[in-house]
Length: 539
Ligand code: GLC
Ligand code: CA
Image 1 (cartoon, rainbow, N blue to C red):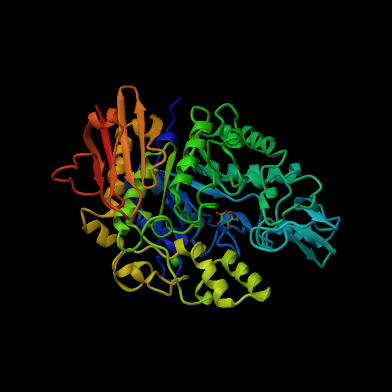
Image 2 (cartoon, protein in one colour):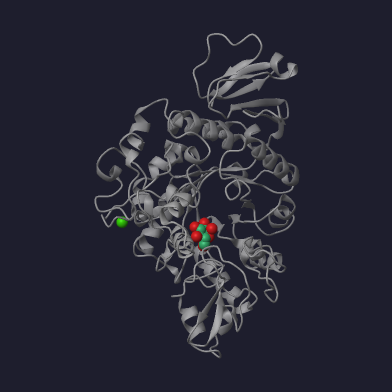
């Protein structure tokens, strides 16, 4: 397996509007990131992924771009951006930006022109049809919106304010490549590519048998040609790293995007866990890991994440955010940093921040949740019931502002935060974490340091054991003579772990653990406490 810097990297995701506000307008900003860079650096991460901060009316929190070459006023100025990039580099880290090119905002000048008349030269920058099919978008009941000006429908995979670009038009591709060069020439280190497998559309837009299964939106013929062209025209000319957001993908298709011989992307996010496993399901999780490992190892590189700005925080969704918040946060951290693939840390994860439940739909901001709420209520469903059904996976669970200390607004802002704070900030915050040697923060720091010092965590062969165990997740990572055993009790019960004899007899020193050592182990196995995590060296 060839070694590259990015395979060895740990990425920290900054959702800037919720990170740190320096001018009191209630939104985090680029200047705020600059002020907290030493904190980020102290975690030991290598790369920062910055959510979109381009000019945008902000209908979908920056994923609706109206000017690709500017910085949104809420985030700051282009000067702030240039300084941020320089400060990141000065600390030996790298910065990747979000590339959102499946769609623009409906306020983008291209779309304004495109919709103005059927013979406008930019008409073909977007997808126009005189009839619609039965497809659903991510955020609305139809992918098609009738535009009065010309009496035709335009296509949108997300909100109506996010029309999809027509990638079959070479002029569109050229515009995007130029825009990418604009940022790469500034010296950024790569891109996280938003829903990048949606660029190619199904020819003729046939009706779907089941329009609720929206996988027809992605992985369509032509997608690999676009990505190869993008690679050849742009990416190959820079030393950069790319990660594609790729919903609806199997490992077999995954290697088509990230296969090392393919010249498309470096790595991907698949969503078999975050989109399809609402609650922790250990058997399913093990199966997913095994299938992706078998399908990708030696061919392409995977990612590991259990939350981000679209997915409820991992302690709330998969662990226990009450009695075992700290233990489960550390247990899942151990998992993420020892499974094959690049680990992603979403801001606040490193202090065990939790999801949130606000009393009313009016307290929420996310367009996905609000649209869904309205759609269901319009069907006659009981509003409170609809509201409650949306709480568990609402995207605002992970978007509440970063909790820095126990002062007003958690020290995030001197103004009115754009989204309410999670009220638990008085107990859960960075200041508290930095003062407690047993905190989740220091555990992440230690894991990240271990990874730097031990290639086995990166390049080691993965070999799961105790496959059928409903609580214990155990696997070896082996590189050359070095063999580690990762042992996790992903449950709230104390669990006796009976290792295969060969392993039990060869247990060596503990590399890391999230509980104090026991005075004596049980005679017939290892008794693991709730969410206990240990890594052993195997002699
Ligand atoms: C991606 C982003 C999400 C956004 C969507 C549309 O899934 O992560 O936040 O709403 O794309 O751009
Ligand atoms: Ca601000």
